[in-house]
Image 1 (spheres, rainbow, N blue to C red):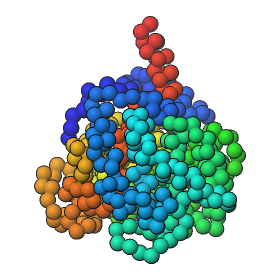
Image 2: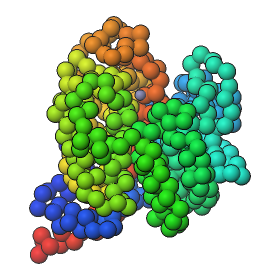
Image 3: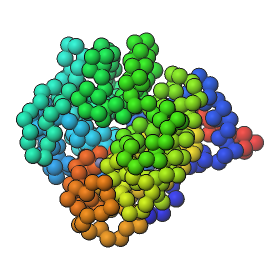
Image 4: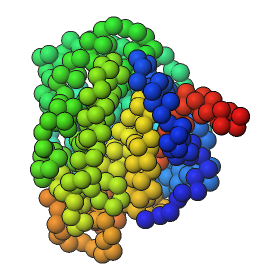
Amino acid sequence: MRPARNVQASTVSAAADAQLTSPIIAVAESNKNLYKELPLGTIRPEGWLREMLLRQKSGSTAKMDELYPLVMGKRNGWLGGDGDQWERGPYWVDGLLPLAYILKDKELIAKVKPWIEWSIRSQTADGYFGPQKDYPEEAGIQRDNSRDWWPKMVMLKILQQYYSATGDKRVIKLMTNYFHYQLKELPQKPLDHWTYWAKYRAGDNLKMVYWLYDITKDQSLLQLGELLHKQSFDFTDAFLNTDFLQKPGSIHTVNLAQGLKEPVIYYQHHRDPQHLEAVKKGLNDITKYNGMAHGLYGGDEALHGNNPTLGSELCTAVEMMYSLESILEITGDVTYADRLEKIAFNALPTQISDDFERHQYFQQANQVMLSRGMRNFGDNHGGTDVCYGLLTGYPCCASNMHQGWPKFTQNLCIAQLMEEWRHWSTVLQN
Ligand SMILES: [Zn+2]
């Protein structure tokens, strides 16, 4: 664990004073979100947080194309190549892009650009975008399921951040066309048509649909929202009415981290408090039955209880942080900010080396033996899961870990929360 409570930029934790939260929450329960994300690049981290971002710049985030060329190099399907067609390329850029624009780093921005340009240019007349051709199996890369809904959800997150930083209107056009395509195609090819991941991660897709609706007010987006919610795993019902969080193996750990936000995302256009209650109960039950000291939970592939010999995946850390950031923006409930800080200050930094070059796939709470060997995990990946390395364990985390600190930075301040904060500061001063 790394103590890091002296946070210069931690407006979120400053808002944790219970006296200040109740009026804010009361207003948030009206029909409009009180909080809005600031444009990417307007929040400038200082002190230790800036240091973490600079370490990413000098570490692997800036050079995954050199360190992991088989997947992140020019052959990647998201650059038009015949290599990896699936999630890993977008995973990396989902962290690289916010890092580039927060640091206003021209070199990193230039590295992001080809991914953005290819994605935008890839859109076809029917609205589809992204890789669309499957290739034969090749060791170390994922060349099939190129049309799967899931990897596009990651690229939508990237494009939303790119728009936030640049205002490039091509993003609005691409998303509008693609969401019209989804509305037409999902009835025949539902979320789990290619793989089952999209069914559990539809909250990420839904978040971008509602984000675009706020800009264009295109009513068909609300229809698409209904469809996505209907085809998604029903987290509201599962959290409220089932005991699945008490059952080891009931859900994949990263799907749970991503899916946690879906009821709250949906709540933006369906003000039924049961969606908020579901997520609150869900997070409490995750903690009660699977919780660990670092703020996450036993999940070494599938959900696995709270024994400290179990593992917690690095993707779970960064995805849980993104879910909590999304939930916080909608609800203003600082309980989620506290959990976000706990994960950011405990689970996240311990699982990545100080130079941001190597990481663990699974971490075990309080484990000091970072050695190769079989552990008490559901899946051991050749015994390399707790070893620090570029590609130890399974390569998703090597690709996905880059979003943790940049998005934490981006979510430290939220637009209208600052207005509220100014208001209540004035009230207190007077
Ligand atoms: Zn992972």
